[in-house]
Image (tube, rainbow, N blue to C red; front, top):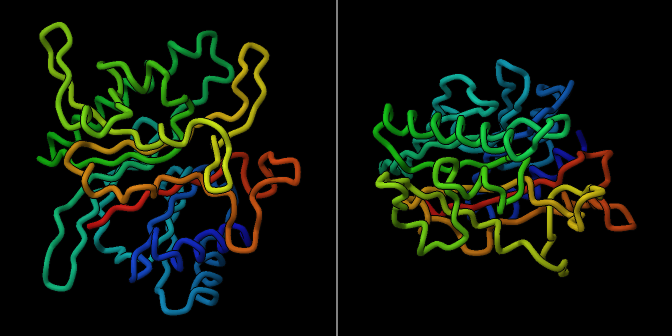
Length: 272
């Protein structure tokens, strides 16, 4: 719990991520037996000036934590291993256009006979669920964040009939026509993180040495943004976090300290 508290407090006090008011909305996937009442108490003790709340989803697979007005969130049940909500923020008397937020934790391919087939299947299910929610809500301003359990270059992420997530902002603003059918894009800002490790950049969110691959750091945790929100993404705010306050989330050898989690947390900021 100490690591979660430190991470949340660090996000709220970093104005580059949370803005001048410390606006934070954090989701923990597979939180186990985490005591949400104790977590909320510790947050309000250690991050004074903010009114924290914590809520566990009905399936127990997600815990959401935030400082934003909880009344601005409209949950409608979990689907496809994800927790969707509509966020309708207000700024004083001015209503901010609502957006559809999906907290994602897709199925792991670890025990699958064919990881690519599973990736494609679960990604298509998510895409169809997103499309349906956008249709019902008459709102295509969607952002999805979390553990997709596949890399950015997987067909499940990039194929037109799955998530159709592009690495380029310019490309993502349009539509893609394949066999006379139009497909809306997502923009995936996590592509810019791939590559060599630097002091200000972590090349992945999950570490595992597979026998059939030279890739050891994997970027399974990602952010997808619809064209309507592309201009709201704060440049450089897509990050893989390696510290949580005074806590180092990496071991002395540079791997993930699994006392906190087997994945590193990721962040994104929207200027709204």
